[in-house]
Amino acid sequence: MQTSTTDAPLLPIAQLIQLKQIAPERLAWVFEETTKEAEFRRRELRRINTLVFCKHLSSLGAGLLAVAGGIGASLYCASIHESLTAATFATTTIGVLAWAFLGNRKAEGATDNTRSE
Image (cartoon, rainbow, N blue to C red; front, side, top):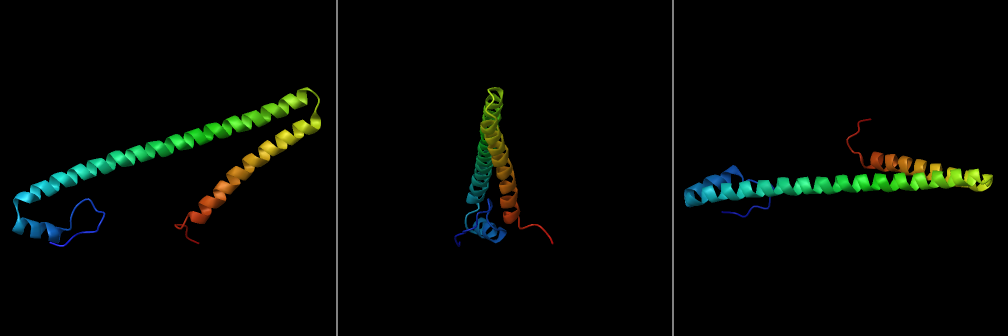
């Protein structure tokens, strides 16, 4: 039998037929191992998706805290009659927030190859 370099969880049908002719008792083992591999891939995919989700949530939380801090600092400066400092905090906070969202959209659009023109 030839070696297979595919990443598919199951061997090609031609190789399974050859294996059945050469060693029929090993065919069940191949299917058992394939089942184990498929279960492992599903668990790994779930773990990766969970980690990505946690990363996104923590990024959103950090962004929320940063924006709340900037707006809070702006409001505090305005309450103690530091208008220029308050305006600087507010403008910078809102500007960075807009830059982050617009920059993210531009990056997503650049990597999206599925769009039709």
